[in-house]
Image (cartoon, helix red, strand yellow):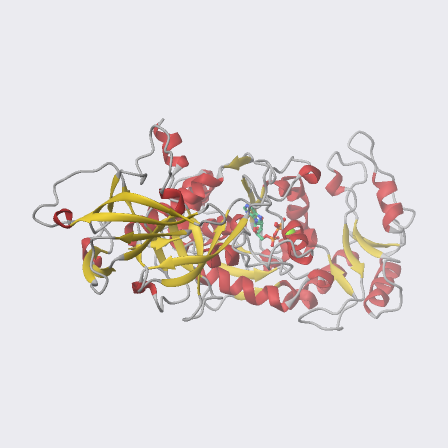
Length: 560
Ligand code: ATP
Ligand code: MG
């Protein structure tokens, strides 16, 4: 496959791979996997893992599998399986013909379990979940052996087969590894390998009433696929001895688990459980709500796969957890769209302007470049006429010192057009609110014209009233007020949703060139930010999402 922009450069994982190549540990192969559990939609944290796993494989001439870690039927669903495939593809990665499901390995995993029993390395335990916890001990105290630990191989085999046959109620028995109840690592204190659970699995239906635990299924699924480097997040570090125990005891292929720091972002949460709560409690419109940190939310908001891959590249791969500033993600999309988004003029909160010295029946077609960063994107025409709209906040009756926009008696340039001067403010006699501005224009001041040299301080965007097309514009802000809402160590009880995270403007006026803009197409609205046509948009009722404003506080902070 092509090397995507988000592929990894040098990092500690690449160093391990280089070392392995020298020692021949994996016979020069590099084979990774991305192993989502289909219990929710993917988020930007998963994008980091996807870029890393597919990137490492691509960088080293290797392969990366997509594997659904579907061992927990009560929480999983095909809706999630489908969305995950869509998101990985959209990010620009290709698993070829290597899409697998841990559930496809259930028969093999069961055989492995019987092998462990025959080896005297696993036993059926009748303790309840609560009792298992009590027997487990703590960080400072060793655990106690289960009273069922010394069952004979024959009895264990018989009971395990009867567990599988459905003879016992849910939760009444488990299969446990026989390792060491006194191990300083609690994960190694006879971990549960199988539990009894009557739940319909989205792929295997009711075939099974026992399901393998993650810590058992994961290393063995990796082994079955002959994964060389099993890259996971830091919280699995303590589980590595169990990972190794599984593949060593069963003498399978021995993949190598490598942990890296998960991505945490300011002002948002990054756990599928918490994101699901937002969806279920209808605090957002769905998994793809443009405020969500999900891949589908970012896509709907207008983010590009290129920007997300660039972001994943920039944050790098480390061994210790940190909190990444949301501004960096926004910086990445600005950089990407600055180069390729067409410019347009849209007035979000219109204020009428009448040009008194411009004939009522005249419409002038002015030329406007589509992207000053990229002349190849050409130009378009923008109609100019006697009645225009400008932004309400581009006018002030009593402007403070550094207000360079329009005010009574002052001049501004209208972008791509003329200099206008505010002659009079017309107010609503009832409310006293401003109804329109009466202005004059300077016919000799046309942008790009021979006599256009005269300079004024402010330049405003505008649209011509008669040709303008109304649109709905949705402005977004962070979902959570608190910067550390997504901190791994954070207590999330104080997390407060930002009440201003969505502002809907229904009366925006856009220049006619935007009519029929396709769903998903992206623009820079001059002075307002980057916007994307929402899937809710219809030709007669356009809807735009603001992806990000123009003010790049991340770049500013870097240059300070
Ligand atoms: P969540 O807590 O959001 O449910 P998870 O780890 O349970 O995440 P999985 O579906 O098991 O979700 O994750 C698939 C892969 O993505 C795993 O290898 C996991 O380590 C990785 N991953 C999940 N969250 C992040 C993150 N925030 N940063 C980097 N990688 C992540
Ligand atoms: Mg998980």
